[in-house]
Image 1 (cartoon, rainbow, N blue to C red):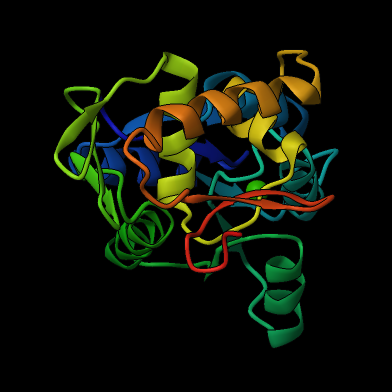
Image 2 (cartoon, protein in one colour):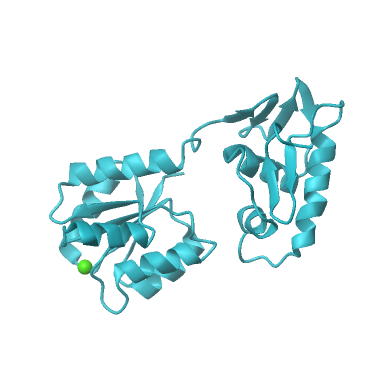
Length: 231
Ligand code: CA
């Protein structure tokens, strides 16, 4: 599937320029000139990256960016802000609102494409990887298989997604709510205790042969993939 880029810009000439250059690079496009619509479309279609103009009618790009960061469904989508204003203070405002990068108009298409690729590489280092490895655990994402110390680990679909999320962010502590958003999706209502049930299953599957438990329980905070301090 093509990498989907959402363009939020009301100036037709800029949209045309972006469309031509992004399509030439093989990206799929989603276009809107309206901030409110951008918020809805982003949470429904989950683009891989958003190019967001600062100057939009009704809702400013800065406000759209802040709201994207507040919704669990769109929180992790990278945003490149476009703006006609080049002052350092504006740049900082844009980055504080949660933008990943910032391009000043007028821009050269090749520079923008380079920024898009750089941001995609930075936020999705393992997007193209077929396998994830952490310690003695190997996940084959294409074949949907997990091995530990060369033995097959049998996981249900939810445990597989949980483990994948941990392996993509080793060492990081996730609360039950964060795991629900990441693994079950923000639109699904599930009791936070459900996370504990699936963590228990995941541990049981991973720890079959008296190997160290790779999942650390962090009291009143959540869980992390982290042997060193597991106790
Ligand atoms: Ca504009």
